[in-house]
Length: 92
Image 1 (tube, helix red, strand yellow):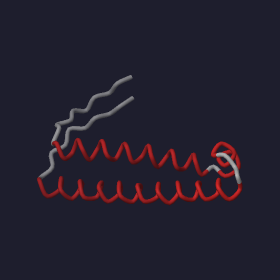
Image 2 (cartoon, rainbow, N blue to C red):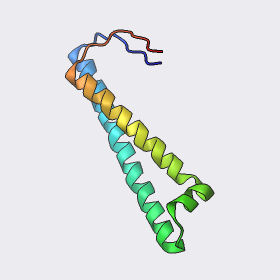
Image 3 (tube, rainbow, N blue to C red):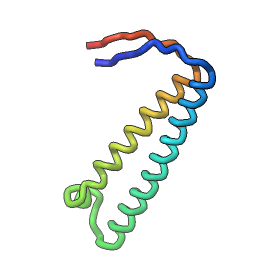
Image 4 (tube, rainbow, N blue to C red):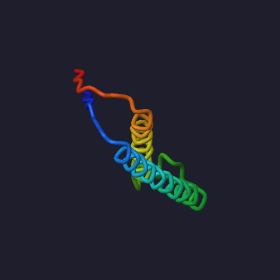
């Protein structure tokens, strides 16, 4: 189910929200880089595949969650910056 909300925000609030989302996107991108490098170093050092690494340490699950959050945040920021009006809509 997806819920969409109709929001009425002044330009200052939209700018603030957009900057906050942009900052969060940058933080997530940095986390992705750090985790990807950590995984590469581990795989190179121990000759272990990413699949084995995931089974033992779960870092790849965390990496995937961050990627998904980042994509969702980008979509939200894009919608806000375009000023697309939203109506509350429930999809089953």
